[in-house]
Image (cartoon, helix red, strand yellow):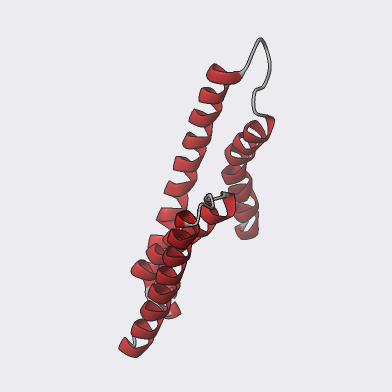
Length: 131
């Protein structure tokens, strides 16, 4: 990986982070509340930092054999963790907020069903590509 490219990418990400943190602190001090968009931007920024710390700014690293193995393993693991978290959230929602014989939070239930079905469906179509 080129040191200059990594330095430029890291500097840019640092400046964006510094700008957003300063903006949110200023908004909070002026009495504005942090909204849903602000939380989503923070999550995207955190994901960007992890992405940068993992791969740097060199796209060739992701494409070599080790990078593909890391990507495949992390995708599988994150799928199972996400499905488990959605199931736990749906159970908590059902226990806490639902009266008799209802599904509970329908969008959450649909997301859970989609997450459970996604991996086997993708495997099926990918296996048909090789048969």
